[in-house]
Image (tube, rainbow, N blue to C red; front, top):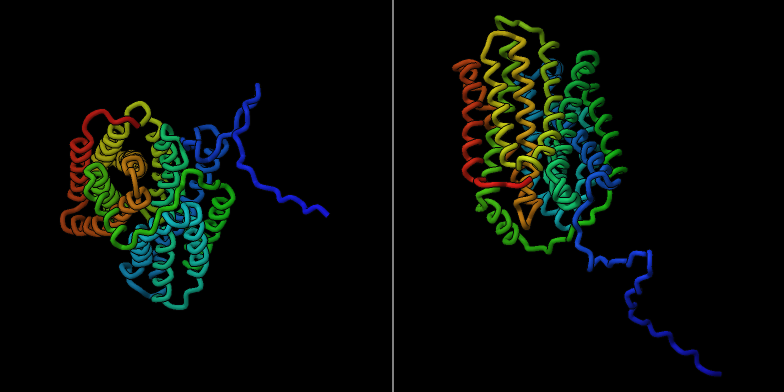
Length: 427
């Protein structure tokens, strides 16, 4: 019998063009330019990351609205109760860089999935804490898990969205973070007042779980990601050092540290001013000042759109100007003007933050995840250090001194930005 001939695999030849039909382009031939605005994938990315922002920041700041209730129920001081926020933000700050290197190996979407899933599970465990030290430990672990979201999300945007629309997309993500921070406080406050801090923590965790599931459903697979080769600690150090030697990136890190620090200081101590004379507002009314975050939801997206006309540099400077003008209004004794000033101040901050966060990925040629992680590290260190130090100024010299100090921080940031990012800068 004749032996069957073996089939030899032939090298596929490119298909001949057929009139009316497009010729398929291989992955190697294709240069990925990112999803364009208006495409289905663009909408899914923005929606998915908005829900990621809600899940992250609803959990991170959820206890802020119930600190007095928590202090009373657990029989701890106000400063000790505040550790439930501080340790969570510290946990996030110290893990953003390790998370960025992990994302370089396993991919942006997978890293964010791991982080948001772990944070959700830990958040559901928080109400079950049997002691205060256990509660603090869970909150710090929760923050460490949440470190896998902020920097990676911005990097993912810069890799997956067309460069022309990347700034607008980053603004949409920051808008989601403002909604998350607001939702966590608004949900926790009333629930905590009625049923205690455990019920408040559970309610926020359920909200975050729903948002996390929506993120997992919506976010599409990455197309612009290329795994980085393992370079060890020495390679990691070179990457970080290179970013810190880049004047453009360093200016953005200083901006994140100073502006976020001033922002947190204002929100930490404005409530004390409003609770005293001549206002003497009750705590329930004071908690509504967080509704000013809605202005940040609007301006963060608005600022991203303006970059195409005026450039990132000019929009960032405009945000700082709004911050300073709004804070100047709080120097009056007229409550309406103070609240209006807070709205303007908040809107200006989130406009500047959305530009700075998105700009890091645009400036960094390599190691984008690490560039964004350094931005977040500076951001949360400013929150911890200046947010706390602002209390010393307020207690010693009063609100006027604190407001002037924060305005000075904004002016310093504006000068650094204007000097370092000189010349026309396209969005």
